[in-house]
Length: 116
Image (tube, rainbow, N blue to C red; front, side, top):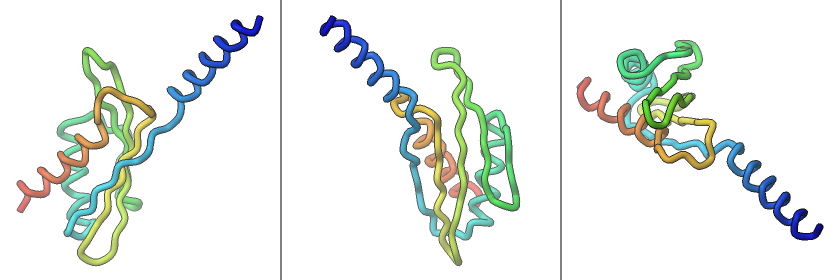
């Protein structure tokens, strides 16, 4: 009985950990948010499946699909004043094999470099 209780407890702890949301990833750019938003919006529409792009709040959501890892959803938002802008990316998985948030932020940086 005690062994069964221990096994059930471990399973519940692993399940709760897997379902928990992960920490957001952030990157700050030395550009105004209007410039970063334009690059991010173009990136999402060209490379991902856009679910939502809101010009008023400068935030969005998109889907990444892959044969091996399936479909994953990401959300992002930006905030800043003057000449800098911080982009924050969120996903649903605490431990994902893919670094989708990091890849997205690096792709935004590349899009900004090519837009200059």
